[in-house]
Image (cartoon, rainbow, N blue to C red; front, side):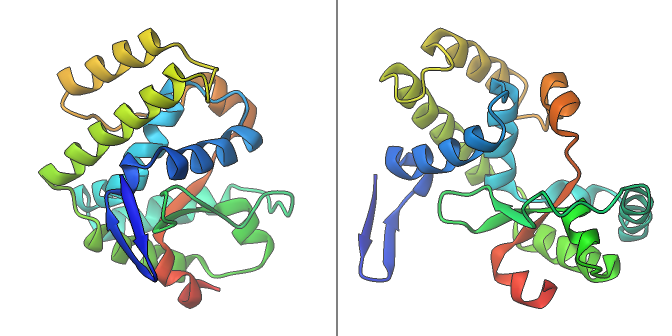
Length: 194
């Protein structure tokens, strides 16, 4: 449970069914074909941010981002960014929308690396992923999110825990229908980005 006392928030945002519901419904409205794997990816990224990019060199990350960015067509129909955390702490910056606004990829690259530094993976992150999956399970069990059965969530959560909270790609359905191209940025850095 998360409590809000004025401007202070006490508790874990991933436990709040209300906050998780709002986050998930926002994404289901835009990406109605999301599968459990995509929900898990959303949760994983919302908890861990882009910490995984620290596993490669910053020059490799920057080169891959530039290559992906150069291969994209600008698109103003996508939102520039989307929150992937119940409190809005982490956002996905859509590369095609970013390109449409003629922003520089070097600045985005720097902010992605900063985000990775401030969201480095810890054991607490895996606890938060479990908490978020439990909240997701409760939302499905209560039929507030009727798309998935509790059994489907249980099976997926078991797989996640047995595989030690792996990073995953978007589902094939998600990739075919939405062709996602984005990078994760801490929301506090958005004012530097735009």
